[in-house]
Picture 1: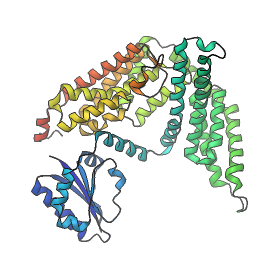
Picture 2: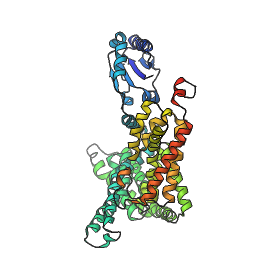
Picture 3: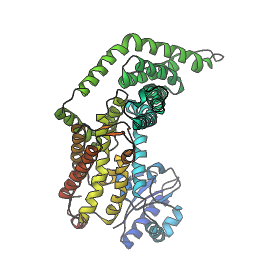
Picture 4: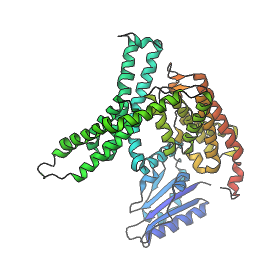
Length: 462
């Protein structure tokens, strides 16, 4: 049975709101269609639609003259009508909604990602803002460095050669900007333009003092909150107020952050970073596999949420210190959940509806592209079976990737970066890790899920 959702509302919210809702409900019952109608009347919002209900709906009928929070319907097929039309022609509206193609699987994934973006707040939001601006530099730098190795591992040591110039672009330029940009845009997220200069300078000092991406994160937050405090607390005459954002705050905030990074923060954070780097470089096969297992499980746990992003940020940050193993585990494990669900829809067709089997094809493409969020619609529909399955599968992938000594110089791109020479170390092991995790995920999903017939009859397990 196709599901619909609807919203009705009018400025007065006394009669027409509820008349339209009643008309839609009766018409749906007559046509054998499931519908939930949210009303926005004099009593406020009643029968509020949940994100899960919106996600599962074939389409949305919107008959509202008041704010209906339309952003939550991004990616869905929306049928708009007047309240009068909903009251008089409810059957026609429902038939129109059913005749429209449902939102694509990719649109559903995009909507979930947008929803998560909107929910980010506080330090996590600021950190992810910095990471998002840093990623293009790391991707470009990593791939250009990999290209330089196509001329030979030591070819870049020949002054003036193409390999040397590629290394200069990727390593000495793109990678050199990685930490300053991370810090700068963390600070920008906190204090707007006032935080950018002290954040960039603090990040540059983090790089030059050897405190790496950890120092960049500290510098970004320090610069942002110092600049924000100055914006709020420093008061000048109106005639001089224009000097505050372009002269006073950049000068004072940069000075404070710079001195603190040199005399207070830089050395201890460098010690932490050096210890972490030395420990990662000394990991034996067993310990490397355990770290890969943890990173892999984190990548699948919330599929693009805070836990996933923590593992991803850790892997990306280490690239600047020439530690490439965790990034290989992170990307391989992030590809596994959608790929495993795609395989499950192929080998256990009775466990999935026709729509889910079609969605599985798109999930496979998203998995190949390293878009872990491609697993979200499946996980939202059956979390207690799907989430444990994908966590175990990704943990297996991460453990194998690091245990086999795989490395990765590019933090994104999925399968499309694999043909670039030297972008992936131990390519065969990397592919084996992805394949093993994909199979484990598919087998677990197949074992845990019930047949579609049993689910649709209503055995109380949904």
